[in-house]
Length: 269
Image (tube, rainbow, N blue to C red; front, side, top):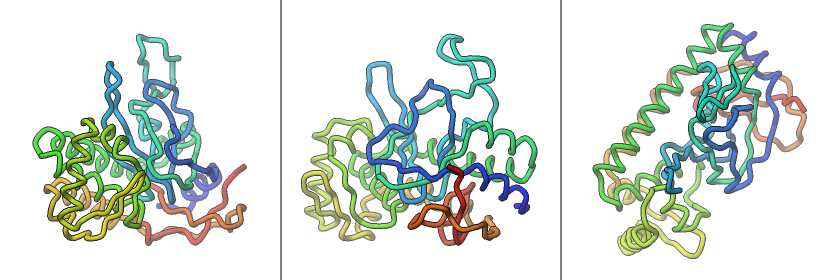
């Protein structure tokens, strides 16, 4: 990507905390910012009219939250949205607390219109995200709950970089769109198999290979899609040092692998 594009995007970044279980934005509301998680993981959630929920994708340092921003204006909620307003199509919830960067939705949309390279990266990432969503949908319909649970755990482990999940079984059940009893039974079977260890509000994976063996093919499909995306990325220039002492490197810009990072980044405040 040309240096001018990186310079523009960098100048609009703002370093933010993303507390665990907080709401980034809700479906049907005006999308004011897009987010690039660095250490946080965000669940994209669909909510039914009866309040039932299901996670359709998870986003970590490989991706961007708020892809609707560059796709043009939308007018939903029975025409109540203002002309030119981009509306969020899913609710975004922080499943693992951490940090990230945000940028105004307007800035992303403007640069996507100006730069074919930026649009190319955004479309490539969005295509991979759509595959993630569609594979999750197929998994929820055709595979057993135990396989879905294993897939969900693996997808989140891929994004957070360690083997410990600080999350309740009730919340996992809401992300899978199933009853808590189903998750409890699945977790018990995985624990008896020596794959996980769990207690109140925490689940640890002790045998990653064993967990993969209990999963269906869906995790591999999703993992390989993001691997192809990041393998096409190129190393980017190194901007000025970040103004916030202790802030981690900027990791999540449009389909880059977490190893190909800026050494530091400057956020606007």
